[in-house]
Amino acid sequence: MNKADLTEVLANKAGIPKVRAASYINIITDAIQDALKNDEKVTISDFGTFTVSQRRAFSGHNPKNGTVMKVPARRIPVFRSGKGLKGALNA
Image 1: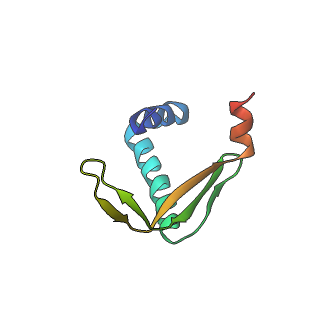
Image 2 (image 1 turned 90 degrees about the vertical axis):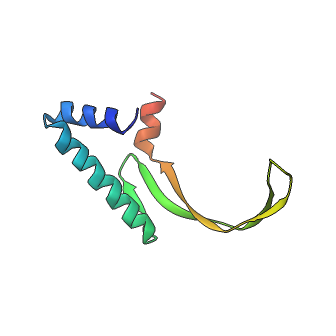
């Protein structure tokens, strides 16, 4: 399922135009993204939690020519599923 499919499902279930559904999805994803940028945790009850994790820098190898390269430290988003989502998948 991609964003267009999700927009269509939301529009059909809520009985709203696809343009409005797409706008709502954009608002939600932007809000989650802004919170993560500010190092805030986003929890959606029974669905899951979005957090930011710090990856340390390390030395890697370029697969094309085998040279050693330094990969910088970076922040990555992490999603942990909630009890409700796990239960729905394993029911």
